[in-house]
Amino acid sequence: MAVRNIREIGDEILLKKAKEVTKINERTEELIDDMIETMYEANGVGLAAPQVGVLKRIVVIDTSTDEEEDGLLVLINPVITDTEGEQRGSEGCLSVPGKTGIVTRPEKVTVKFFDRDMNEQTLEAEGLLARAVCHECDHLEGKLYVELVEGELMDVNSLKKDEDEEENGEEA
Ligand code: NI
Image 1 (cartoon, protein in one colour):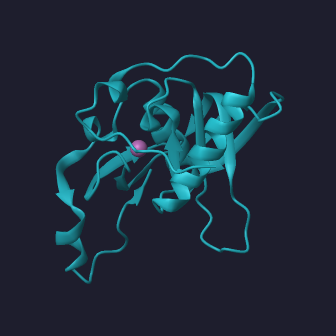
Image 2: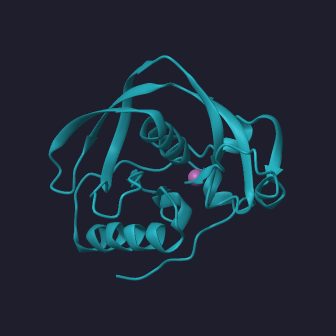
């Protein structure tokens, strides 16, 4: 496994649509392992393949906070099939370092995807996990959360000074 370079806003690959994965070969396995390592190393809660420069429909997510808990998800060719409600909250992205902004997302999503063995799975997610699924699926469409931000894109550092701040955006 290796940590890969995370592409940042301004890099055209982040605006391109990723292609479906049709089979898992050694290269794909290596990519997934590297994405997991890269996400953890960057303290992110999610990472999509285009963020490491690969236009494949693969995302990794881990929104678990307890280190004992195994919250790692690998979603291949994910498709959101249903959404419910809405949540308004701060969001961030490893490709837009140091920034955060308010984005409204569904409170719950149903997502169909393939796991690493290419078995089809369905996941019902809510709260932060639902937000992460939406954020990462947008990356596969070449969309960044900055397009969805309500009001100003803010500096994470300026927010840290404000002790009343509920929670800084998780980076994905
Ligand atoms: Ni992101």
